Length: 431
Image (cartoon, rainbow, N blue to C red):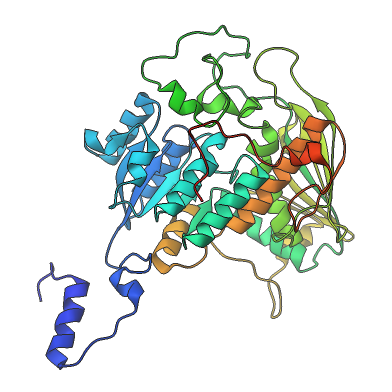
């Protein structure tokens, strides 16, 4: 048999030789939404500046992936990504809908700004594409639930970019907490930056001007409210503008609150009481998201999370405080008190959490196997919900009571009105 003989042809030939029908699982032939094991995953990357560029490079390094298209509203980003992926000019797009219409695309990576996540994710699911999407899952609680429903309805694989779930030290910290090695969990303390790290020499007061020729600004705005262009508004700095995101509440909170949920064992629920205090915003310019804050979350089972801003980088991370010790984790940092906790090894009967050592490769594993990812839609939805709950409390300036099952605020009409961000026509969530 020559090296060019495909696995599918070999199996069919073998069946004929044996004179009997060969019954194959549909996943072997690439049916039922699965990709044949001898095929590469054909990936399209939507939003290829910033995190999108890093994600693209990670997928390019996976021998099981073929990047077949890139898409961005910024022609400069688009051209850089096209060159990195060695694509033809016709494989670089301005409009994500053209990408999703391609039948040769198996999966998409979405690293657009937060306000685009839900529209693209639901459309991708409906188009039969698996999805690696940046955090937070969506820019609102109801929007995130719509993504979960679309993923379930169309039988899609989703990985949210909360990549700390693929970090060994993060997983160890959460396992130690879940197995009682710091005693009863008292509180989870989260520290995030207390001053916007603005990209470029902007302060948010820059004058209105025409958008540059390389940027399709109406497409960049998409479902967000119409607003005049300013160089301080776009790309990385959307994070500091409430029309798109609530600052570090989601930018870092999406990661850290996700870890807190994992360690506390609350991935399938949400807090019932939320209170944002000490909320300070800049007094001028377009950067109007909360810049400093303290948010307390209380769960029905008594678990308490406190997320607060700090100007000391040593505070940035997640500290689990128990009756017998503490564990601090953030990326490569893993600190325990007492230090002897570092010697803990798992034993029979211990809680052992999902193992992933590479977030991007884990996504491709799941696309091929149709198995689970480290950060699937339901888990990512609950983590993002914590961010939005804190942002809603900060916006209203008062404590809130929340129903984790109904995912609403009961009879609190003002709070319920903020469960979903308005979507400007003609954009919509795909049912």
